Image (cartoon, rainbow, N blue to C red):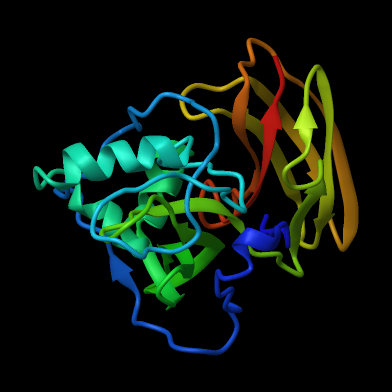
Length: 260
């Protein structure tokens, strides 16, 4: 889930709450778009710029979030700006809605999540509610938080977390913390006959999984999640629940960093 983990250099990022503000009609992302099945950028040190001030990628400074997807670092985003963007490839990475849906469908594997339900976007910050079709309407699975990454103009969008929810949250481990070995993952949930799945994912692959924890009514929840084959770099920890009207009806994530 989203955390208020923003050091001084990232305070220029305008964080806009998902409640209220501008919204858009539910939008389905066509299956024929050029959204890939996985990202190709390899993990590398997390550096970057907080604002776009030039016409081309320039020297990096600190990035105030854990970069989760589709880039593992600002250096990888800047390489994409120099190569793929200038060649006209993967323009979907400039659209916060498409990146959010691709994150859920392609990266997390939640294939039923195929639409933007609503979104609030500023020049550098976006909160995009993604969801699924149910009984002629759209259900919201999560509100994904994205920020611009890279430098200069043409900065792509990067997933950095999800917004907290009153009905499903992930509060442990803390955002940006270092993890290794077995991790205690937990939060709060409200619902009837819930079943919680938890996984840990670097930019590619899965390094930990747990299924499944029964839960019902407003309650706290926690599981022990063993991590294996980890490499230094960002890791997305995701908890999901569903099975009533869709396989995944709600999910929440947090970003951490794995050690050597």
